[in-house]
Each structure stands twice: as C-alpha cells, then as structure tokens.
Image (cartoon, rainbow, N blue to C red; front, side):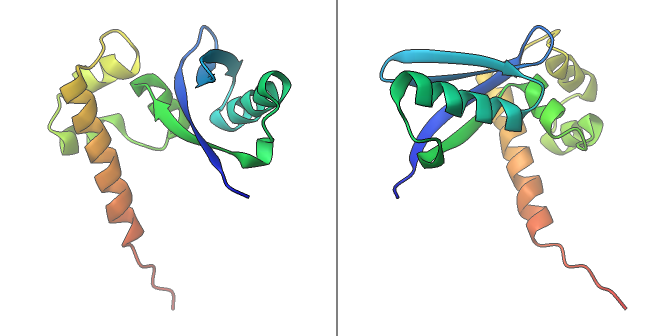
Length: 128
C-alpha cells in the first residue's frame, strides 16, 4: 500500500496545538493537546471529508517554534540557542511568540535541531 504524504503544519492554538492540512484544495483544521492526538483527529477528518484511508496517510510535520518546544519539551532552549548561534533570550521570545523568527533564523534553528538528531544517532551506550 503506497503512503500518501501530506504536510501537517502545527502551530500554537488558543489553548492547545492547532494543525492544518490541505488536500484537494480543501483546508482541514483541528486542535488537540499533543501532536499524536492532532494527527489522529486529522486522519479521521480526511476520511470523513475526502474518504482517505487513515492507514495510507503519512504526515510530514512542520512546527512553529512554540509547538516545536512544546512537542520536544526535553530540549533546553538556552542550549539550542547557543548551538544555533542565536541569543537565548531571543529564542525564548520566539518560543513564547512574543517575536517571530525570519526565514533565515528559522532555518538556523531547523539545521541545529537536525544536527542534534544526527549527533544523538551516533551515541553508543556502554553497559558493564
């Protein structure tokens, strides 16, 4: 069964996370407390409105800075900022949506997160 890849844009909602997907020029929006619940709710709506098999849907997640640090709350904003070469206070303002990053700043943050993932994938644990 071939997977259908759809972009799921995740942003700060009023009291939770908001996700939006476009399919056949239809914008589908839902809210949930976490990304997993959001994904499941959107799959149900895509089935209801577009008759898409939920098992065929694979989302590509696009996070705003707020939702990124909500979903991956184990990330230390100060440490990520330092690795990205961004002022920690400024990244905190992005994360709280007091300010919004430019495309260039967002790309720096994205590249830093990807590098962290790459570095972590090389970790080996020794047990006695």
